[in-house]
Length: 182
Ligand code: SF4
Ligand code: SF4
Image (cartoon, rainbow, N blue to C red):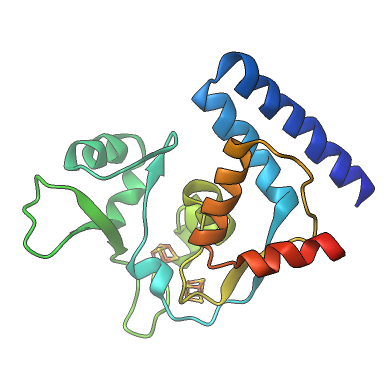
């Protein structure tokens, strides 16, 4: 644990320096991407609800695929993603924003009909979801939890990332505060 804490503060130093001198969004996101694994952990088990295959988000290079143009560009690079069909909000036309995707490989029994060839993001679920969009579905058997480490740092940008992750993963401030006494 001591080593992990040390690494956290090394990444935080980089984060702090970026906020002080450069304010580069990509560096900020990149460093937060490392730091969050010192703060959060994923546990639980799949309960075969199929929710992750029925309602998923696709992200490429850190940007959500939410237009048909972005979807078509993605299919050129990863044709195996053709199985993911865009879902629009009720009343929206196809030229409007894509809300979610559903996978055509999900069977009525909530099984994957192409399990052997499922894309990388499915292989790596739920970690892929946490890495790309920062949260796990509320109905999923996997959950994001605190790892047990309280970061004694003050930067408001850092804390805005922490609170966003807590909100998205339904973690309370009481749970965070309880880490101070560990
Ligand atoms: S949403 Fe979670 S519990 Fe449901 S099938 Fe996917 S991984 Fe399993
Ligand atoms: S390929 Fe299989 S595991 Fe991946 S989203 Fe589709 S049904 Fe789910």
